[in-house]
Image (cartoon, rainbow, N blue to C red; front, side, top):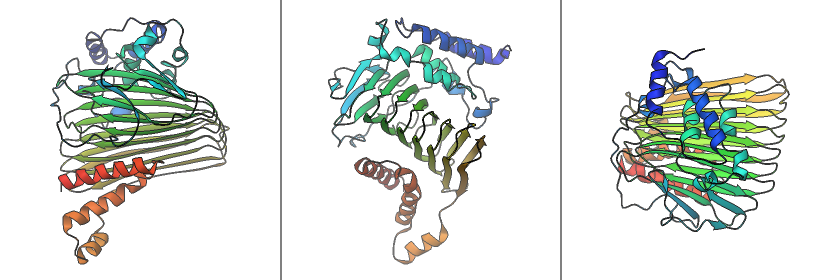
Length: 426
């Protein structure tokens, strides 16, 4: 079926501003992604999964100016020993990065992969993104696969002694970055991936993660504090037998953020936990869209998302659990909640369950409300100032999401960032 003229015109206008990198082993995947994109078109407000979030500034040929945020505070994760891989406005910075050598893992730049006809990443680049286009189209991910300018391929064969940290710096007020990473975790291997930073004025990022039987990947992300930035991110994850995937995202500030997680549990006894905490103030729109597919026996999934909104901020959650036929003994849990600190903010939620197996335990819930008056009265009656009491109750509200971080030190660092933000904006 032909695209509507409006959608086709918007798609071709955006494509006219992009150039596909000269690629070796990723060329075929890039061209296939471009064909997918042209067939589906870039997103519009009439698309089912974009009715709560305006995609206009994410697909426009022009980039809206985003002022660079400056602070003297140490960056998140700075207190941890980690292998640092730095990108500035979407371009790898070797002078700011560590040597990409670490036991139990090999790391290559996407640019280097493109110069080779044979590389392990060829079997992964664009594959999970393509799988993730069904049953819901994700055109910004297809655009990413076709036109990604940089990124890394991480092959985990053991248990590295420290996390791998992807750091995104924003230097230009009109930068338009497209990054694509691929990660393969082999059987029995385990790794922690950290991400932080605003990246660019407009940021389109895609990560494809393939976890083999018995592999484990922990992911903790803190999206940067540049308030005027816009970002669309995608994570496509496939889990094998007895594998584990745990991902947590903290978002503070940003005029528009859309985070998508697409997870496939394809091996028996696999575990996938996806969580997020966000705090937004004023001209802030934050969208978490999650799709988890159970396609194996005795698998567990968790979706835990908490949003704190005030001064007209908007939060969106779209989460789905799909249990395929034969995926018996599925344990799927989904919760999305918002704390509205005034009458001007809003939370829009669309939780979904689709189940084709009869021996499952699946649940979902979504609530929205104000600070608990009884709890506030209890704290105030014991001499706690109103602002401090509000901050304490806000942190308690976010705790369930933060608790999904397995590493206690990382969780404490995230909590300290939240405390700092709340203190500054009280």
